[in-house]
Image (cartoon, rainbow, N blue to C red; front, side, top):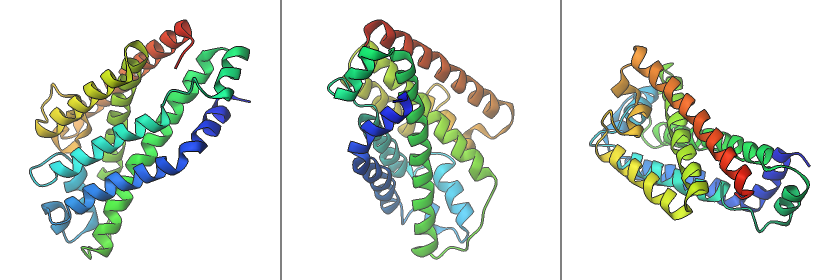
Length: 233
């Protein structure tokens, strides 16, 4: 069995929890923000830009719920698999490097799914509940990319902390980073670089994306190296 196939086989057990998480937390955040400025727009694209462009006084509860839901998702898709028979068999017959890489790639996939679910749920509420006119802005694609990359940057830090320390420490640190990023979005806080409105496009935005991707690669390498030495994830 290939490592990606093995990982998806193991995740199937928790697939219902994954989908519930991907829907529930963005849905709760949207419901909590339905009376905010973001949903007072007449056009859908304008509403989504207000909601996902940056943290404001009117949408901070959405961002907090959205980030918390992502940490919950990480607990499911990256939970320890050492008790699984399939995992033990893989460790005995193969090396851990390819399996760890598969886990990291699965994290990328479900990060994209989670962010897409958030955009779709907000869009449905905008169209069906707030009766907005449908419109699309190309900046939404950039927002999607920036948020997804930034969330996965946090996820790669979470995984690195998990394999070097403990799951609990990883949760505490990432939740603290998210909380500070929502309450005080400043340049020294990682979550700041997911907010296109604050980066204002141009060199700073592309530089931030490049650095985040570079660090994701470094953290991934360190995670794989640690797991290879420990034979455990």
